[in-house]
Amino acid sequence: MRSWMAAAAALACTAGLAAAQDNTEGQVDPKELAAIIAAHPSWQPWLSDPSLAKLTLAGPKMPNSPWRADDIRRPQPPVVHTGTECSGPPPADADLLFDGHDISRWTGDHINEWTVKDGVLTAGGRVYNFLKTRASYGDVQIHLEFREPAQPDPPVNPQRRGNSGVFPMGLYEIQILDSFGVETYPDGTLGAIYSQNPPLANAARPPGAWQCYDIIFHAPHFDGGKLASPARMTALLNGVLVQDNFPLIGATVHGAVGHYTPHPAELPLAIQDHGNPESRVSFRNIWVRRLAPPK
Image 1 (cartoon, helix red, strand yellow):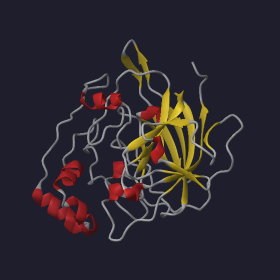
Image 2 (tube, one colour; image 1 turned 90 degrees about the horizontal axis):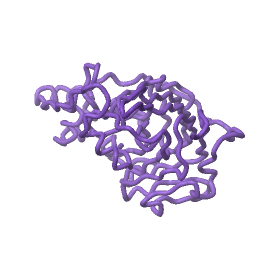
Image 3 (cartoon, rainbow, N blue to C red; image 1 turned 90 degrees about the vertical axis):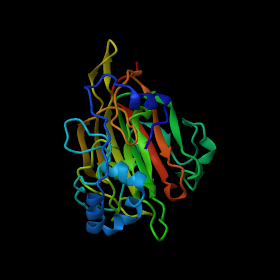
């Protein structure tokens, strides 16, 4: 949920180049909290944690929106059932980032936490870390397939269930999470642009089933140290449109409203190991296509 780049930390506390935004946190209303738990008993185990209640009910206000970041009160996305297939082999002009054999196209501070077995790349689930590509990308088409692990009984906090993410430029996250029959704050569910925009639909498949993301990402542009145009993201999850050319507010920052800070036109793509055993997400068939010539 957080970016692997140190720059992201600065984005959380720098006014940056985007329009002024209200990062003021609110207070949890005990009566409202009790009413929400009464209406959604399955949320009680994690909303009883004061820090999680504050995150999902009293986060900073979102710009141009009635909601707060990670607001559990936002409407849940409608459920859409999908098939079982993902797409075939990569296009001829794609950069094949993982073909089932090795992770030579990747690097990271904890790369040994990741394993490759039987053509599948799996997060270790012990240390919070990121794999990032050795190559850098700007405007890009991304395809990857992922599989959520089986979950324990009784269930854990929804944000610990198969949590990972895809980070174009290592900064802008679209969420991976076990969201099959599970509710969490809508801008933190599978298909969400994390802490910014819920998916248009919940197209999740159950744990153990392969799922597929197809993402079109357009990088932000800066002119003279100022934001000229924001990053935009379109995404299909299991063939269902979940993000439609959404203009990102800024880089992903957990529990806060992100901002833009100037950065290079191309940066590595990253995928996340959330660092808990319930989030040993597996991947296969990862490829990208550049949408503009490299500079």
